[in-house]
Length: 245
Image 1 (spheres, helix red, strand yellow):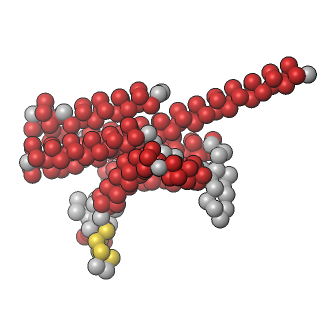
Image 2 (cartoon, rainbow, N blue to C red; image 1 turned 90 degrees about the horizontal axis):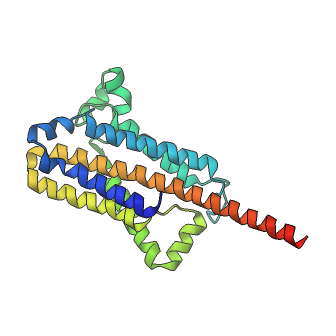
Image 3 (cartoon, rainbow, N blue to C red; image 1 turned 90 degrees about the vertical axis):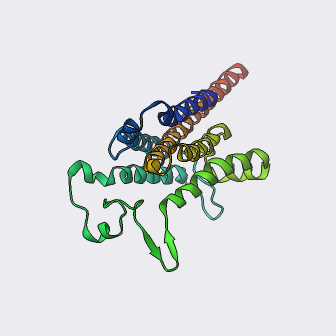
């Protein structure tokens, strides 16, 4: 798929997700954004797809990383993304708790705001610092998905540095969809009121998770495109060598 097509798809899906607050009744909105309902399941499935694609690219892409002190044979960033996305998928389904029906351990239940076996709903303090998974994720999407694509577009040195360490960079058109989702979530919060805060949060999370799957698909299409280009170059070289002989 082309970048333009994927960006258009991402835009349409984001608009569609947040349109539920305009076109559906309040009762339906609350129901479909409940735990284990369609909105959350779409997000969990998106993260699983993104994880599988990144793991596939880690195995297949032999570009490696130049990390100054050492080089790797494969792209460790893809492995890192695969682990992070799978972790997010497992968190969304509470590591299978609601599927297999086990009870939340008492120590976890005491610090989990939803009484579930997951980390992102925990309220933890490390000294004077409070561990907030939502804040960490916000830092990730804003810095990696928005700022980095913009920085590599305006700064040649930044682009060359990312290419040297083989850090995959998404196109700015896809990165901007994360910012759009955040803005729409703020609008939805204002429009729906505090009673729908959970519904808005779940919809925003699903929008982000779907976008991560789209980004992973873009990484895959870029990998295929480069493979095809390399194969074409090798074919041209063989023809040239045969002509010279």
